[in-house]
Length: 121
Image (cartoon, rainbow, N blue to C red; front, side, top):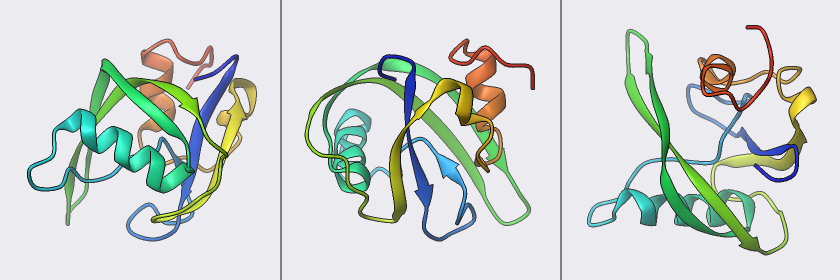
């Protein structure tokens, strides 16, 4: 988050291809969760960041997969926003426009319950 905006990426492929989500991905072998957060933000958005505390978590369950999503507070240090990795697009999205986008399953509800967005889901 930054001044009324949320950093989002549009997924390029996979189960959530074409939908908008928070930057993130798998934790690689030997990597801490905090290291993965910083790496994924850099890969998907081109931005340099520092990982803060765990903000919240939720699960996405389907017949063929079960994801446990961990969301951390992050401080963006700088860089130029540019999509990369498996992100097809990256953008700072104003809070009021977030729910107008096709979001990944459970994201709007998570953001509302966490108090990030003032919306009725």
